[in-house]
Structures are given as C-alpha cells and as structure tokens.
Image (tube, rainbow, N blue to C red):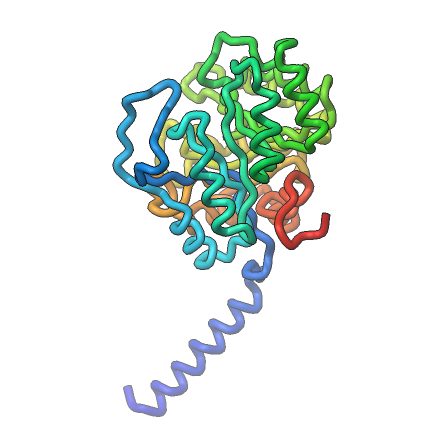
Length: 311
C-alpha cells in the first residue's frame, strides 16, 4: 500500500470511529456508586475473628488502597464500605479506611445481633466513628428469630433516631420477618443484599423468592440488584441463569428501588470491574439508560449521605 492510500485509509478509519463514538451513549460522566464494598487487610493490627469460622485463613488481601485505584480507573465517585465477616464485630479496619479517604466513602459495620446491648453498639459506631449503618446477616442463622424479636425493637428505634441504614444478607424464607420490621419502623432505610438470595438449586425457587416482592410497598426499602455470581449455578459470565430473577425484581420494584454493588476491590477473582459494568449496561438489556443511571448511582443518594453532596 502506498503512503497516500494508507493516509486515506487511516482518515476513513478515524471518521468511522468518530461516528461510532457519536452514536454511543456517553457514560463517562454518569454518577457511579458502589453500594457494597468489603475490604480487608492481612495486617496483624487488624486481626480476624470470624464468628462462624474462627480458624479461617485468608491468603489474599483486598485493601482499601486497591479500591481507591479501581475507582479512578472506572470513574466511580463513591463507595459504601461494608465490614466483611472476617473481622467479626470489630469494625476497626473499616473505620481506618473511612477516615483515610473521607471524601470517597461512607461505612457500614457489623454488630452482634444477639448482644443485649446491640442498640448501644449501633450508637457507638454511628456517633463516635461516623458510620452510617450496619449490616446484619440472618443468613448465618436460618432458624433464628432475632430479626423481628421484641428484643430488637430498641435497636430499630435507635436507628430511626440516628438515621441509620440497615442492610440484610438474608434468605428468602426470612423475608416475612424483615417485612414486619419494615412496617413497624418506617424510619429505618433498608437494603436487601444479593437480590434476596434466590436459591437456584431448588426445583422451584420462585415460591420463596417471591416473598421478597412484598417489600415493594415500603418506599424505604431498596434491593441490591448485583453480584450475579453469588446466585448463578453455571458460574459462567454473563450468568444467564440469573437473568429471570433480575428481570422479575425490576418488574416488581421498578428502577427507583434498585441499587448496585460489587462486593470487593482488586484483586477481583469473581468478576472484574469492566465485566461488572458490562453485566448491567449490556446483558440486562431490559434496563433503559435512565434506569441504569438510577441503579448505578442516583438511587444511592436517597439512602446515604455522601461527602460533598447536598444533604
């Protein structure tokens, strides 16, 4: 190919690329907030104390610095830090991370739901250390009824006073307990993790899964429509076996009660960040672009108070 022909070909390619870019929705300026990010370190200053697995050995760290780097690379504005269960009820590393990068994060900790002073522990982490909520995991207690027990009323009353957010890692059959508390304490904002954990291994997972749909009547409840690898049986991207559950949740709750989160920063051994976004932007094609803006960022502004954003 002579030099002139090469130049014409290059101009044609550039013109075509420019036209393609013009037709592609501009996503770089949209608000993206990761609403569920678990970070951890192997630094002995922050020892592990997993309540159910005290001998757990974790070989790979996922420190806060990895998330800061990832946020720059993928234009994430904020993230909600959630204490992984590795540290038990000690939220020190999340506190350290929050105060190391106060312009990027808000934080949720863990407190023992069976502690008789659980309401006081909530106040301590919110008032003394600036946390905005707590995560509870009744999934680890499938037969327990502490979630809607009268002993937990003071906890929820305190959350209403503090404006605290509760997120729940919960099994489908436990949803009626959460429904009761959402009705009793409407001042507490609630996030249901991992699409409510439908059990795809069951012959018919829908009967129990649909119990979550009764939460749609509460405007203070949001569903985390994310982390499909948590649910999928195939474990192969794009996790097509989860699509019907994502679509049904969208159809029931609508786009304003859905949020998005990834789980953890680099190193991402389940799903790299580009694939996390591709799952929402490409494969869940029933979302409109407006839906995606709500899901990926704007809805989170109705739940948490992020630094630099209007109250």
